Amino acid sequence: GKMACLEPEDPLKAPWQQHLRGARQNGAESAWVPDTAVLACMSCQARFGVLRRRHHCRRCGAVVCDDCSGNRMAAHLIYGHAPPASKDAEERVRICDACARVVDYHIKKKLQA
View 1 (cartoon, helix red, strand yellow):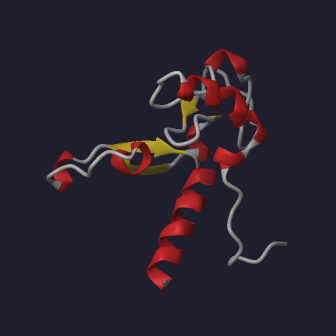
View 2 (cartoon, rainbow, N blue to C red):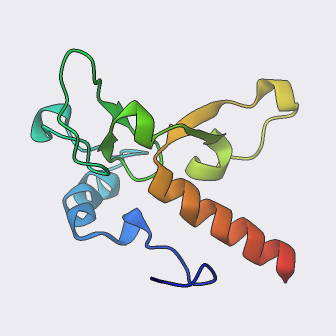
View 3 (cartoon, rainbow, N blue to C red):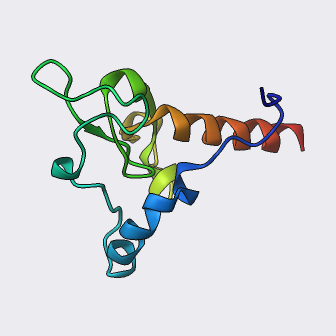
């Protein structure tokens, strides 16, 4: 397998992202894959149904299940806003596990620099 020090694959560079880029260029702050376009989790491929709900990653827009989107991240880091005045005011939003790995990688890299 790949060594842990290698940069994880970033969902923002995935081929399906080109469909969302147009929406972002047209002024949408974030572009999401439409719920109706996806029958199964884009991460683990488990089929959605009554018991397995769809969730959107706020970073890449992927439609994923709860098991594949357990991480939360400060909204300002994703959307490029200024951080809120207080930690209490900070909105934390859902991100998929793949994005969480990318973010963790870059944070660790910065800390080692």
